Amino acid sequence: MISQVLAMDLQTSGTGSSGGAIALSIILLIAILFFLIRWSLKKYFIDKKDSMLPVINHTKTVIKIVFINIFLLLAINSQVAAEINFKPLFENSERDLSLRLLDVMPELNTLSVGNDDASNIIIEFLDYNCGFCKRIHPELMELAEEEDVKLYFFHFPILSDTSRFYAQTVLAVALQDINRALDVHHAMMSVSGSLTKKKVESILKRADVNLNQFASDMQGVELVEMLEVSYFLAKKIGAKGTPTLVINNQVIPGYIPKNSILGMLK
Image (tube, rainbow, N blue to C red; front, side):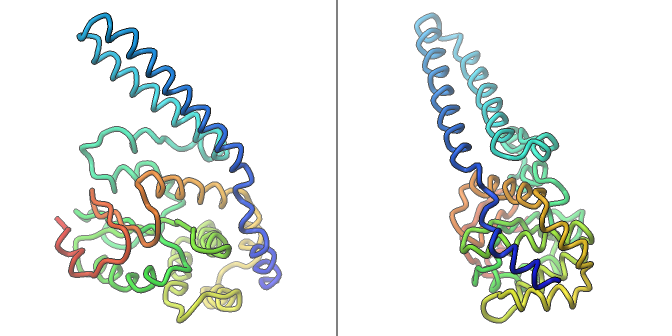
């Protein structure tokens, strides 16, 4: 049964963004409308009185937040979007970016290790087909075990057609047991060479995953929705590849040695 599930999902894992063209059209329309309103406000008020500038700036901020949330509600399935408040990502900029990302990301979508009360938050945006993600994985794990660090894993599946499928596999396991999902995550990150269907099947069996529930969860839209949120956050912070690390308030693209990360901690 598991082989059939894996084979079927490998064929369909790239179809989760069927609304991509619609979403692109929506965001273009929103952008045009935003700039038209911004231009109108500036043209009307600046000619009147400089004291109105704070009003303009506040109005633009409100409009921006409203349009962002409208886009997200349209681009991401409403069931998930309705449960997510994206405002913390764009407000309270005095707080570390890592904390603001955690405020937005649904708890179900986060795998983590380390001390919950740690002073340092590291978020890794990763792809299971990424060689440098595999290279940095044991170093990040050591930091979470040895230092005052809480480490979170966010998915950013961009490298191949199978990347989304592997991310969905881990998220599907997380729906039934977060600890098993961490075991599967660590095993997939520790695979020598490229991941394959056969290797993933072996990992799931060793983790004692409930395969009936796994098969059912892999067919649900919830996994696609969860990945869309993670993907949006990665793009919003400027991530262009994997790994991308958020270390407290710093965004670090690409692989970085453990000793360099130590120098960035509080």
